[in-house]
Image (cartoon, rainbow, N blue to C red; front, side, top):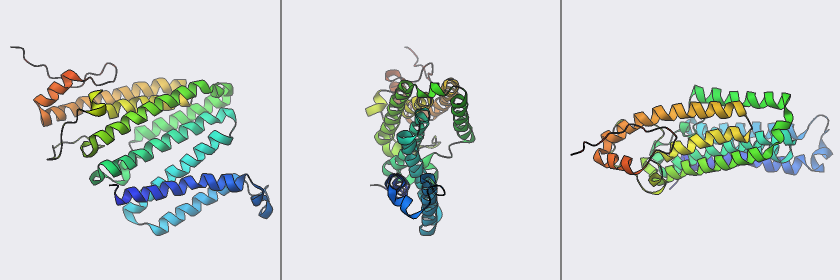
Length: 291
């Protein structure tokens, strides 16, 4: 069953996403022109006004953690609406950026919603992963800057949409694999590496865990690279691949030490049967003594 804050997030996300329909209905009709001067108020203003009213509504209705959850869900819903609008109505050179915004909104909202269903006892307002780390924010800002620079100096490059389509497929693969890992592990999945084994903590080896030992990391790795292919950011494609590889190499090594402490021989047997799934990463491997 979905938790209470999970339901609140659904309301917040749909409230933000509904801005898309308001924009399409009023922004592309003669109704708006009938009552206001189009030279003063344009559809972008309508989007901003709707977002402001929605934020006030969320602030009035919710308090504490519930407010934090609803506000972040609202933000992601608004981002999804903005991404779809850019994808549909912006010039061709801006469409990859719209697709990228949609990919980001879906990833972060589905991350929270999946935890709300599969492991609600660990759910917090941080489960959206929007505040993952300073490095994550810097990486995102850097990718936006690269997009703007290429768009300014070599705009035609951003119209090679076949490259973006491949990026979207890679993002879809990564997204499906990561969420498949969460839904398979369910209450065994957490965003933080566990230091102590809980009574309900079991070793999951079926489903996507029979393909890779760390499918959530494999999915996130390829998803992150896919986001930069979507935007046709050649520099960030390489930078994201290297930075993500280093991050997951260190994280997997540390996590496998804890898993070996938790499950001992069972995890060693699992290591022997299933690989990690990321290139040139072995994790922390214990070799059995041969008799």
